Length: 166
Ligand code: GDP
Ligand code: MG
Image 1: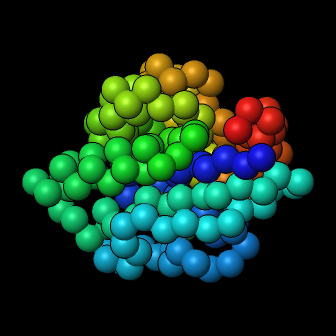
Image 2 (image 1 turned 90 degrees about the vertical axis):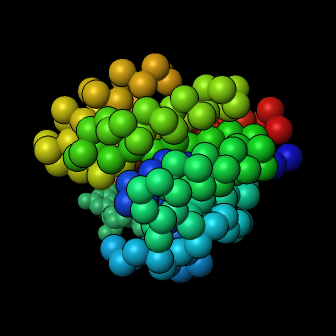
């Protein structure tokens, strides 16, 4: 029994950082430089005793303005179709942006099974952004710090029942 988790969200929220933490190898490059990671990449994830497939939706970092929305949409839709469940990440320090709202809409339209996570949530700076995340209407946000490994136990508890379902 296993499931596939797609990590989705706009560029720079920490998707690849989380992917690397789950996969335990530097499969997805983490970088601030545009154009470093591309498209969708898949890895074997481990979290406690859970084993599952994880998809990192990259390939948006090098796209600007007009083409971003279309490409973002196609890539995210593809990731959602491949996955049993989506981990939708926002940046708790930035709060909810218009682009985040576009993502939320895509996920709603696709009827995706969504776990909402507010990443970069270490420290007090993130409190306002975490609260803002409720406005997306996707339930209670999971407080995460992919970089510091915080919130991984809560993520485990959210994924644990799915391991039985799929
Ligand atoms: P992606 O574009 O969504 O894949 O984002 P990346 O994983 O490449 O991360 C973008 C930037 O955010 C990098 O500089 C990361 O080091 C940083 N980052 C990722 N997770 C965290 C976090 O939990 N806290 C903080 N403060 N920075 C993070
Ligand atoms: Mg990335």
